[in-house]
Length: 216
Image 1 (cartoon, rainbow, N blue to C red):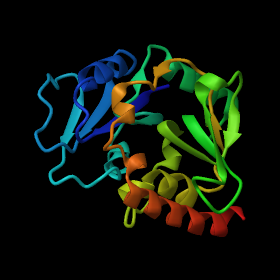
Image 2: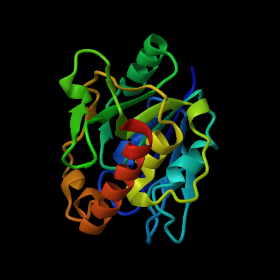
Image 3: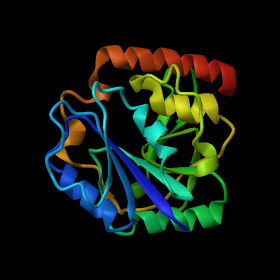
């Protein structure tokens, strides 16, 4: 089964080369969406490199995913270090679970407030696949769950826009795996999206609309 990887970056460059290299060790179809101002400065001969200027936001991951060749497509953040075996883990659980969207982080929904009424889970906490309402950070999906209209897909809501507005009834699972490192300094930097008050407000309001429409 062929698997593709799409990575989006716009400023986290310190470990990006290593992150891309580890993905390339696991698949020959790696796509890097470079939305940075300066552009990356390492060898791009082993990857599919797409440069965006100006930065259109995180919706580019969903657009570029449609250009890939994989039966399964992984969408990955640039602040998580994959380890060898992560793609094999996704393939294994796809074969066990069937058509679904998988990931390494996710939330269950319990009410109207995204930050108060959802519960977070992560792959390293689990011994078996766990069904959730939403996934993020690194996701993996069959091609049938990729196409969607990207109008209105703003950066603060792009993952909810994909999973919960366009594919609300598709099963979503966190798979058990330790084949990643989410403790890179970049994941806690002051400019991260989840720390931006205005973006948190947009996310909270959008989640409320989606919850009332599909989950209440």
